[in-house]
Length: 328
Ligand code: UDP
Image (cartoon, rainbow, N blue to C red; front, side, top):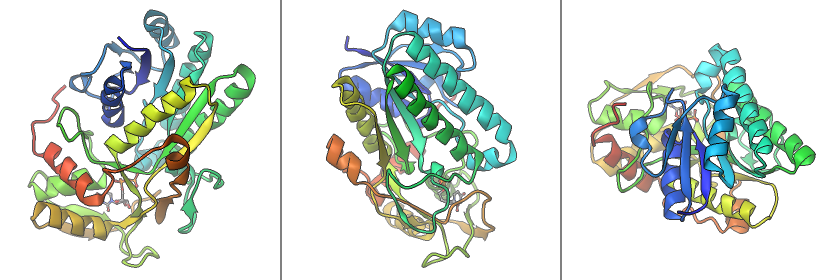
């Protein structure tokens, strides 16, 4: 067995794909997840500890039992809309939970930490391409809670030598092309799975949130990255840490933006089916355009996001949409 990595949120969408990538790269992923939004059936690539990040003793016990060389922290609440309505929940779960984990990691003598952050830490910056040095001004509690963990990690690096790789994701899409894991949220709020469910008749229609944004076609622009490419960057980031290269922040996107209407058009082409669409109001908390400056991960880590074309992401998500879902 390879070196172990504790993966919080390993039962979730991105975490489960990360476990698959870690295993393939020769590591043993140990999932730590409370199954609040994750699926036991998605834990397929290594041991499973059911536990909650609010429970410091449970984290300490997992670290003592499994002795990982690094921690990868995915577990978090991640719904922008919910975070606008219930900010305390986001500060409590994401920040208190993350701080518990970071303190436990240091106490266990581990010095390598990979953190799942977000472009939502940047806020709404009027169409500028966002690179790692762009100032962060979150406009919702979700983004603010993620930025707080970034800040904590910088403090812990300085105080205790805890090395971190922070990945700020843009919009993650697609699924494992082998169909072992995929995207399944309850409730689902993300554009591509909702759109594909609408095509597949599992819901009546996709509601487009806002057509009056200051973009060429009036809908929001996002930078989409394939989940398999995204998790591959995590393996590279882990190696970066294990090679002693120190702390680093990386944005993960492709540098190319797609509007909601463009995504709908592509889905029509890939599936060869009509997309049932209705047009609605803006969703509170949504930024107009979020596009990544994507050079650093490519240059420093040798990251090659080859699957992150819109047709490939839709094709892989479509394959997953039409197979049996996780039930527990
Ligand atoms: N969106 C939409 N209808 C939906 C879900 C999403 O129009 O049912 C839009 C949303 O306003 C945003 C884009 O699709 O502009 C991507 O949203 P998603 O929730 O997938 O990711 P986010 O950018 O919020 O992280």
